Image 1 (cartoon, rainbow, N blue to C red):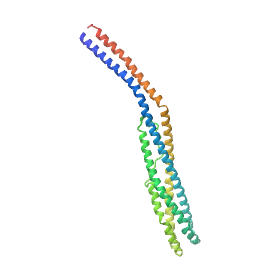
Image 2 (cartoon, one colour):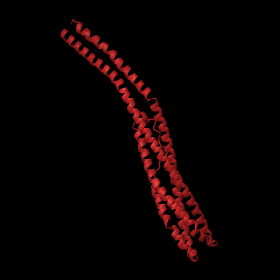
Image 3 (tube, one colour):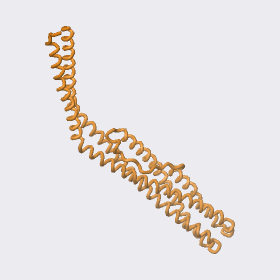
Length: 282
């Protein structure tokens, strides 16, 4: 029986030695890895901040392009509205219609078509930017430290027809309009037979322009929302980085206290094991 008690005492002492080694290794590891953890997290935050700045610049450029496109669409809508009213009064004012079809309207349509082509390219880039932003927001959500603070988008937009495609379709639909109206102006004596067709075309284009104008407004709202989200996220990351050293130090101190407690607990193992070894009783 004495042999087994001593064997048990040796095993208890061995467990105490293992616990002591683990505790000391844990304490040393915590303070050895602390600078590396701070450096790694700080570098990650710097990278995220640069990405946010780049995305913000892209959003600003896209917002300006959409503002220009919106101005062009608004101007075109005004011209179409004026043309529609002129067509309604065409019979008593056929000469006014002829002047409009051969002068102001073709120039406005050509300018609008050029602006819409530019806006189409910008819209394609914008849709790619918004998709990248969604992916970026989802990526940040995977970080345990940041997931609870990642701002969420207040609205989403997923039209059946992308804005770039709508702009391209509108640009294509108005491309030949000036030539059509120039032909009509040479046959004003037959204008009565063509006025209904002209008015229907104008109404169709006005509806398309109004729909695109609404789409542009929604996209501008998304850009504004995304810009605010990026700004809030940058403030959050800046705050985290400013307090990173203190936060990591607090975590290291807490873990160190846990290992110190574990280290002190080994005294019980050493004492119990030593008593088992020295006790020769049955």
